[in-house]
Length: 113
Length: 116
Image 1 (cartoon, helix red, strand yellow):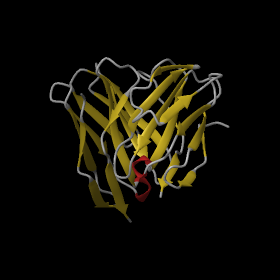
Image 2 (tube, rainbow over the protein chains, first blue to last red):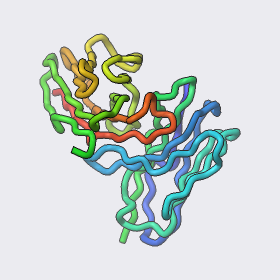
Image 3 (cartoon, chains in turn green, red):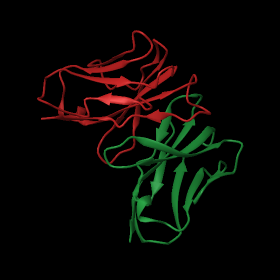
């Protein structure tokens, strides 16, 4: 059974700092890995999706990498802004399922002005 | 509307009451998912519909949970005889495609259930 772990559970940084969020998973036979953002009282917004054959994806100030062999992914946020404050979740599709996402518990990010 | 709509947004139930949570997916979306998110946890899969067919209900915690999507659009998650451990945010998501493999899911804002 896939297990997804996110470290740290919470992170507080000053505005402008570059930061890295970590995600690890136990079953390396994944179809893809996604990073989501969750704001209080709102649903999840997909930020980046990395297919199993890819090593990284970029969108604006966000860059996500994937190392299947080591069971790790990182989300890099450049020049953080207060608007980046949210919970960031990673999730994998694996275990022969093309629809059942397994999520980590998330990292609560606070960017202080 | 342009997004996935869930209602009610907040529900408080007394232990033992039945509740029904509604999800209006984006029009034309084939796949519909329900996830349960307890406080401080990541979402956990409950069930998956492809059109009106419930292809996977393996994540439903007990036989008190029941989901349906009779016409392949709106879905209802029903919880009978609610218990305190049912307190969570119930998230609905939909997608144009079968499964969610290569495709971005659109999530609703969730229904927060509190069982007293």
